[in-house]
Amino acid sequence: MGKLNSYYSKLPEDDRILVSHILDMIEICERSYQPKFSFFLDERQVILAENVMQEQHCEHYSFSGGYDNASRKVLGVFPAYWEDKENYPISILSIKYRESDKLTHRDFLGVFMSRQIKRNMLGDIVVGKGEATVFVYKTVKDMLLSEISKIGSVGVKITEIDNADIKAEQSFIEKIGTVSSLRLDSVVSVASGLSREKSASLIKGGNVTVMYNVVEVPSYQMSVGETFSVRGSGKFILFSVNGKTKKDRIHITVKKYN
Image 1 (cartoon, rainbow, N blue to C red):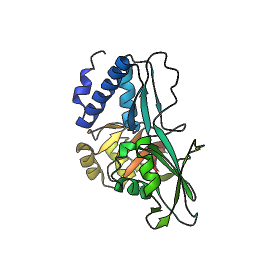
Image 2 (cartoon, rainbow, N blue to C red):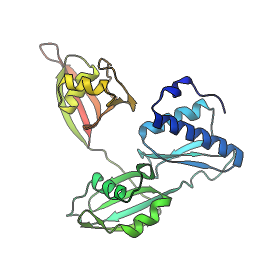
Image 3 (spheres, one colour):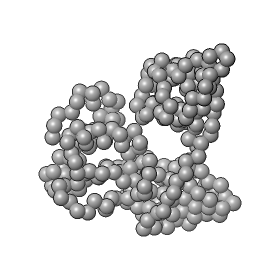
Image 4 (cartoon, one colour):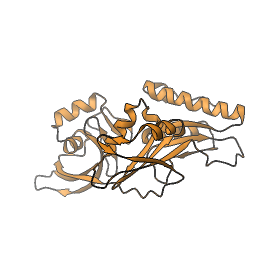
């Protein structure tokens, strides 16, 4: 394995642990000639893992979340010429309930984590009308199948299925406002409803990420299409810039992931 760029030594501890784990996966895979899999990674961690794999010149890897366009994915590292690259340790659970009962992503996540299941054992949770499809690490499948019969006060039936035809449609809440410039603190203020001063304080405190990287500079210039997350407020995208007011302020549209 090659040496890592010094950039990685400046990462937060959790990210350094992940990088170290990925390097171990590569080494063990090469030594044992057996595939190795991570736990579920979020979108920012997937980008970090992709960068590490490329820097290590490792070509035999891929990501899977159990369906196309998954947000949370498992990294698989494979020996050269390994043919079976589809056998990821992911189980798919179907949860059905009455359509009149309204359950949210948070409801499902809360029940799973109350069973002491770590977040990295859980992939995407896709909620529909009267049903949800949940992607989990195989090691927690049996526990969920045997223990869960209710989500909150709602009775549910949970079964394992072989595959899922997910056509996830992301919904948004639209926020419109005007800013003097596309500075991060101004855009965060529109998105969160907080004052620009409080937004700047959040940014300086490391509570805002842009494209999955922490940005601590309030004057950072945002671009249309960039996603950003504000701790306590959610995830957003700077969707469009829509001209200027008579006082030369900029109309922007920000969309919050629902």
